Length: 103
Image 1 (cartoon, helix red, strand yellow):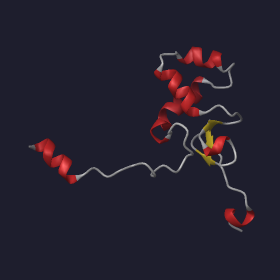
Image 2 (cartoon, rainbow, N blue to C red):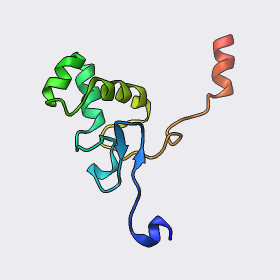
Image 3 (cartoon, helix red, strand yellow):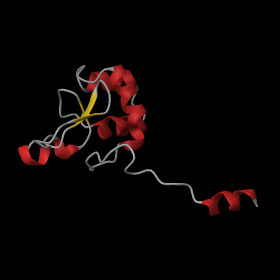
């Protein structure tokens, strides 16, 4: 039986600590066992919080290993958007662009 027939969508594991489940937070990547959104932690890093500070803010529910994994998957995490797959947002480089750079 397919996931559509059973009515249950399966979670997508983005790593050991990060999962995207269609029924949790609208399918946005979260840290396993929580509803802590990965993009929120990535924004905390952008604002200059240290990894230790982030661990403290989340009371240990987000470990340094989980933060490292968030950084690794950051190219596929889009704020307020459900995870659509590893290749959903990639684009081919235009041949014209490489010619323009060469010129």
